[in-house]
View 1 (cartoon, rainbow, N blue to C red):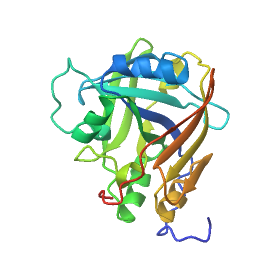
View 2: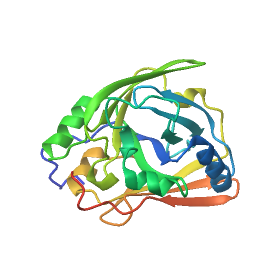
View 3: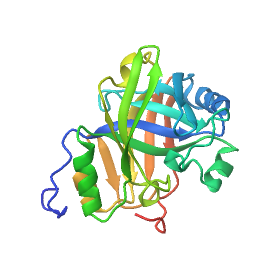
Length: 238
């Protein structure tokens, strides 16, 4: 990797896979999918008032992917419409039509200790990873606070291939999650330019030039389960 040209950007030391996002039409549908697909029910989650969404979380950390979890997220029907497009493209009519039938793996979120620096490098490569927004929610264990990149249109960059960046402020949510029998075995990202993969330099992640934008394998009580997104959309804005 040292021979490639990444625009002079240093690799993102400390960047790691943080969580996987599964979009659902409703949380009830997402819970049923998780139990049927992975053999377990997710734990508690919470509400994101400023985005009009809510979630449930499942610990999937492993030796290769520490402090990693699965997020099942849906539009909160009891929340007022947000003042801006919801994150992860959840307002996209095609996505909402798709998840009416079944939840789907949507995206990967990557944590970094310096979101501003890594964002600047991505912008220098001609990408639009979004602006850093401050977010928080209260939990029984205390407040969670983080900064996350969200595009103005709410979409996910590079047709979904570019992971969303997050920087936790203090406690990580996995610290309060009950252990689960599900563990993340492998992560494969596809459709990103080599300059971007060299910049992110994610531990344990395999990169492929084409194919699904995200493919993951999880060890579950019923055996390995592989989930994939669709291929990265080459017509999508970067």
